[in-house]
Amino acid sequence: AGGLGRGSATSRLGGLIRSITALTSKHEEEKLIQQELSNLKAMVSAPSTTLRLMKECMVRLMYCEMLGYEASFGYIHAIKLAQQGNLFEKRVGYLAVSLFLHENHELLLLLVNTVVKDLQSTNLMEVCMALTVASQVFPLEMIPAVLPLVEDKLQHSKEIIRRKAVQALYKFYLIAPNQVQHIHDKFRFALCDRDVGVMAASLHIYLQMVKVKSQLVFILNETGGGEELKCRQGIIAVEHPFAELGCCGDF
Image: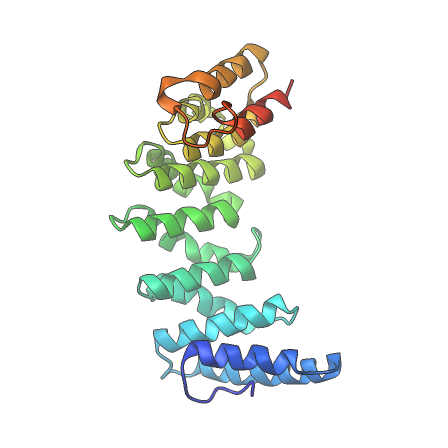
């Protein structure tokens, strides 16, 4: 049941899940997963494997890893999928990378050029995927290579891009605060963004950086009555309650 076989990716993954849930012991699970990983290793290593099939294999590898079984042979193929695939294949590749690798993993260096390229893309999905992976796992020493591109996305016309840029910069702040101190004013500007989601995302990083109480009062004024942020998430006449509570918690 855990073998490769024919049929769609969904049916193969579904078959694997059903087979595992029907087992009665950990030993049986280990035996099934090891067989599945053996089959997948042969598949991803085969020269004839297409990117479409690689995407299907990657989904099953992620499931095995989520169960606690290492699938390190697939890590490099996840990076290649993010580099070479179409939008759907690239999305799975990026997702696999964020699940498989940690910030200090040496293979992440191979992904930097792809992230740079996608940040410069005119395709919104590619930009979103690059910003997402940058906000999840990104090598500290390569932050300078993408920082100007991420900063530039704070001015993007699409709110989802601006929000993801803020989240990526927040990640950079957590792992390398000295490298983002110079954009303090840009975070203040993001607090007044016309989109509530962008404002809320910027609040987390701003509260880490701000020290002066009067500036927090400014934030409360903006979230409580600013014309640019009129109620889209109102609760009992409090326009942005969670943002305001976040500010109050810092007093």
